[in-house]
Length: 317
Image 1 (cartoon, rainbow, N blue to C red):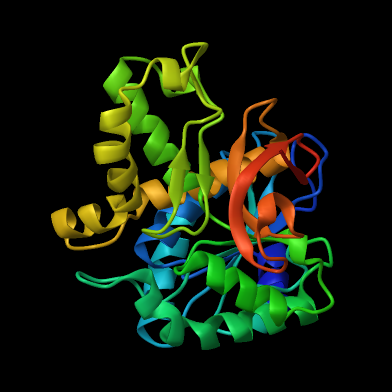
Image 2 (image 1 turned 180 degrees about the vertical axis):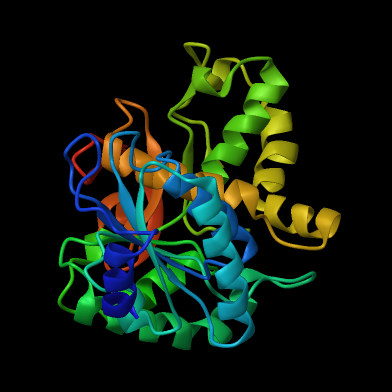
């Protein structure tokens, strides 16, 4: 429970500190499915300061399912303690979302039924709808009104819609579905193909859902300062690149027998780092609520290009 663990923390060796060394108060970051493969990789990077910056301390509020999930979460907490992260101001563990989301500044909804071999993200709809209904409702009741929520669990766009719908007192623009992983995949493939750094690729757009129906678009992209369409072999782009980006998740499942974990955690960190710290004039693909831009049906969560200025907000391009 948040209250009990926090009090033990103040009194014990894993104390929750009131300030970081920079003087900034710690931010509360809730992570669901924290003992799973993505969650395990994610909490370590959050605790190290890679997500919110090297001057921002955090309190990790970790959620898992009762029983075996909570047992594994104990091991994750042990590793967090053993890592002695200077920016980790405290940790809590719970199987109750009303506790795990208490006063959250950021929430990463990772926990969901995983996608297995031969499954499409649409197959996960029924299984995961109830999870995100309950979590959206809990966020509405106990998280900060300004809480930024990133949905990682698939199907991410639909789950973001379900969670936001069940949080009527929260701004739907503060719910986001992760398509940063797809953008990173596309940028990595382009960098490998054309012998450059991913930093030399800009304005790569992912349109649509985090699924095989997405469209990775280079119409506005640049590679080493040149318009991408003047560099890229368009036969390769349409025949290999687009379908490879669309089906990369399934390709990874076939190769390792499990869905993307480390790369998904990395993309979640990158997404919220851009939102919190800013990413200059680089375009970032985010699944956000539509107000009719680009002809997209209002109310849908759909990936579009955005710019993050570092004030915990984004604006659509």
